Length: 196
Image (cartoon, rainbow, N blue to C red; front, side, top):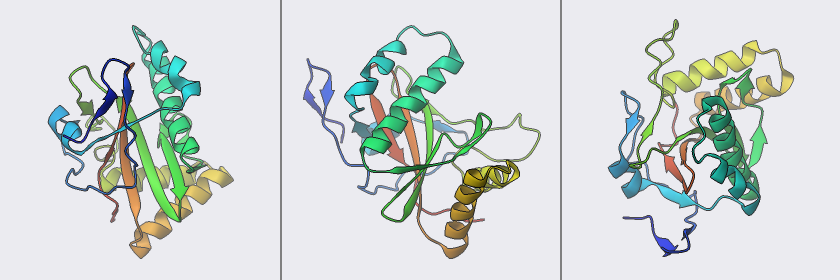
């Protein structure tokens, strides 16, 4: 198991850098990522101190929208404090939870609740009126990139252009799922290749 506590009583966890590639986990067609896959392939991250209170706010929070915003803020703080540049990634409240650039590579991030037993559920989008695919699948990434273009927001269009160019040129696009609950946050890399 790769997830190691520095001090089990303190709740502090060892930071394992995100750039250690492990692509044995692929985007599941069901959207379900088991606790076993996460514990074997995930990396516990240490959210910056300024967002620890946000993590505590997740405890007993029953407002799904507020919880989602808190989780995204926790993940965003981690990426920014780790030297990633945030790009525009939203169409209203839709599209990507985060798109980041570091060392010339793109990182598409989806933030999800880390369930009590350690699993994560990506949306399968089966109820979507359009066939956009499971979150973090190549089909979903391409469809959300197309939605960014429709925003007419110049910054969102720049992000869409970067993603489209990387897809067309076969450049890396790291697909990162971040699971967050009130006591920990874990990243899981689902590969770095997106094809049409």
